[in-house]
Image 1 (spheres, rainbow, N blue to C red):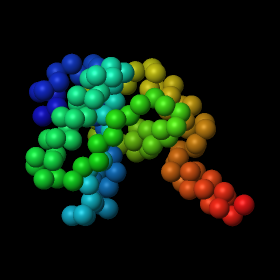
Image 2: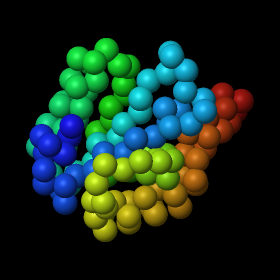
Image 3: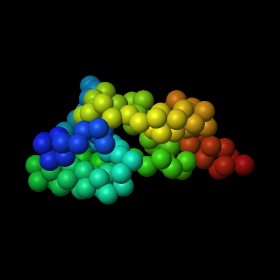
Image 4: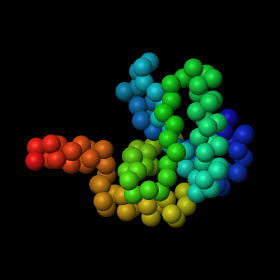
Length: 123
């Protein structure tokens, strides 16, 4: 569906991750999707297209535009936890970013964030 609408597959990737691809998926679950491109306009168009597509089908989805921001540690989980990628697009900028994020937050950034919040509450 996306490749037909956006055939320039050397400029973006869509990563499917989360419970949809595991045995933990239930009828109440959503499909987790990360959209990545270094071309801002393209990233937004694919994000909108994907979100609208699943909305029209009546399928719950959580579509995330991945940006190379230091505050967006969710990207680590998307990249390392994904089981399916729509294209092979993986520019050096994304690889370097993920390496920096893993050094800063570890392999499981959500777990690190929860640990830090707990320490803050206790202190």
